[in-house]
Amino acid sequence: MRQKEVKFVYEVYNSIKSLSKDDADLLAHARKITATAYAPYSNFQVGAVALLANGEIIHGSNQENASYPVGLCAERVLISAISSLYPNTAINTMVISYHNLNGNSGHPISPCGICRQSLLEYEARLNHPMRVIMSGMDGKVFVIANAAMLLPLSFTNEDLK
Ligand code: THU
Image (tube, rainbow, N blue to C red):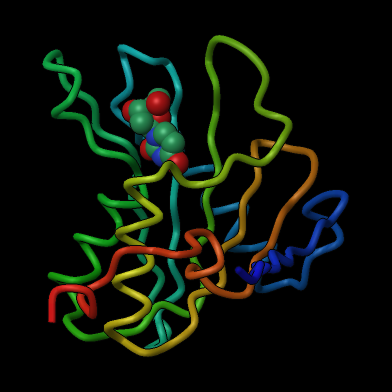
């Protein structure tokens, strides 16, 4: 038997003020876009913004449904929009923010498990690292260098071969 270790590295910034101008603009955009969420059931409004390799900036937000499992997270709304609007275009940076109408929005959230799977495959198929920036409406900001870090030992299309 031998033990293997997976290292997870991420950057922590105290606030949006510590980010570069470009990243701060993207985060401000994601915070604003939380207002476009349709989240009457959870009252948890998530905004996601992507800077594409072609320079375009696209956003998405979570879209819920009275039939709860039908709802989609902001990250997958965004990935689907990018994939259909700009086929085969890499994502340089994705920024995720949220506004919890029932409580606190002052700490970063990270994508749910299904979204991690989705981000990972997008990153792998474009063969281009996707930085992920996470924050709430204020407070700390986490930055990871690529989406694959969010899902070690992941299931991928390689496993289907
Ligand atoms: N949600 C997202 O859109 N992204 C995440 O990363 C976490 C959760 C949404 C799903 C649901 O509409 C609401 O937030 C509460 O879970």
